[in-house]
Length: 375
Ligand code: IPM
Ligand code: MG
Figure 1 (tube, rainbow, N blue to C red):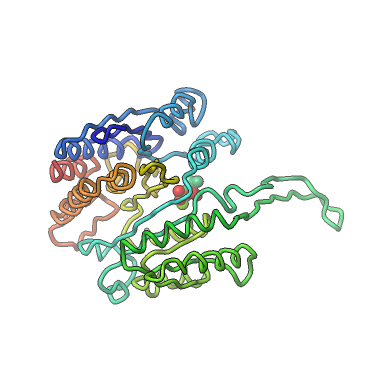
Figure 2: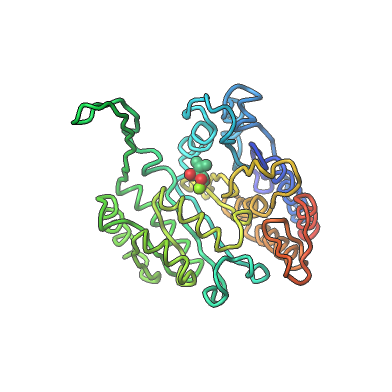
């Protein structure tokens, strides 16, 4: 990688993916030009777009492109209503998304949730529960647990009373090195923030929860400057609603992180605002990463210029920060987003009629405004 060239794979995918990707690339082009960087973004199909173009959710050429790139900027994949006869192993969620996570060893998923002051009324919680603002980083383990545990199967069985039934098995497996490496990511992230990690588990019931808690505690001893607390996942789900300001970094295994990050996103006003970074190990100072909005394909609003491109744009900012070491350019993009919001621009998901000065805009206009603010 030449330090001044961003060689990325841009995989827009399905639903609103192409629209929000177009805006993110527009913003990236403006930001890279303003900082004398070269953007080499190659687009390729993935998801149903991959199935339509090449018969597979992750076409070979797309995977090759990812291997040749320094980072992947991803839209979203999966259209639940399309072709219910396609086996689940071939559907985009598993065949593209989970495959890429595993293939590139993207074990660390970072989902930063912030409630901008200007959008405080979009938060479903009463103002007194929002304190001075919500600012949570969910650190989710992404390549283990129930998503990838073996065995994983459905079988026909006969119950003790002789009736036939089917049984589905998913196994929750973690090894200590898997827990250790994600715990390090959480503690290191906390050092750049408010120095607190809340580790989530179900240690009162699950063996995995006990191992998780013990391992995180042990790793935490190496970070004396970071406060560590443990919380059962059911309590955490409740605390997110009662007192979200108590959280800084929230460390979770894969499935708990999936659930809690959607809950956290709602606190931030909209799923359309939540970016994510999925990172592998850092080698020679470089971190290969995969950057995607945490929301889905939103097929109901696709193609209508209604989607909020901010999650995709902020994902591009995370890419600059984590894969290209350009915190300055990442900040410029984040400030561009803040400026568009401060100027009153709102896509439908963050628009509230009672908000003075707010103006409802489409995907494209929001992207134009952010690009203008960073360029
Ligand atoms: C997410 C999504 C995915 C997940 C789905 C689409 C497989 O919900 O990234 O949070 O469960 O990981
Ligand atoms: Mg999810």
